[in-house]
Length: 288
Image 1 (cartoon, rainbow, N blue to C red):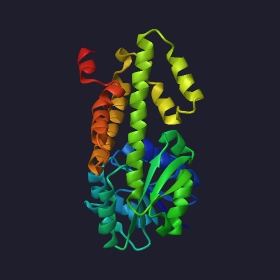
Image 2: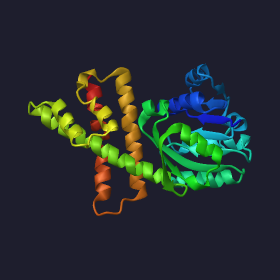
Image 3: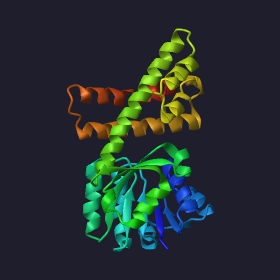
């Protein structure tokens, strides 16, 4: 029986782990720096791993979903990391949105332990993750062992072969540029209609009728009618987190080096706009 591991139980990771526990068909060992997140997964049937190394020892396939490159390096090679529990039957899947060089560096390091690393970036949000309907952008799909492919089938409603290892990471960054551009356009159009007394619901319905309103943008648009004075506490913290993730992802896009004339300026403008897009300006906080 295949043993599964999951490291990083944030909003997306906990939802993916929940689905894996329910549908994976084998034991799932989890680890996170937040004990409450681990306890929640254990309540669903997972085993708690005291470290990434312990997760690796118990697993044939380990999924990593952590915020950034530094966290991936720590999970792999830091104290108590996967390196300390590595074995030749192990495959590691990186779901985080990171630069492709991060994936390739992780793959190179893990090869010294006899471990395979692949990028399997995910899109679709936590609700889709919970029911196994994510879009998974996989790098090196043709070379993955069957056990790793089976895990991706648990996560994915749509599995896309992005190309060689690292290509899934590039594809996810590119898709995020398109997504955040649509969010920014939606916010601008919404405010334009609202400020002239129009019906914002009609704007969204028209966009949907034209076939251009995607599910993620529709979810984002639900935030646009929340008055600024209501954005505080947990809601503000959540939106600040989302704006920070967007800023990080767009910074990765700039590192990849857009090649069309003016393309970098567009991405830079999007990056600068993210606090406004998520309605978490610093001056708003100071006024509350």
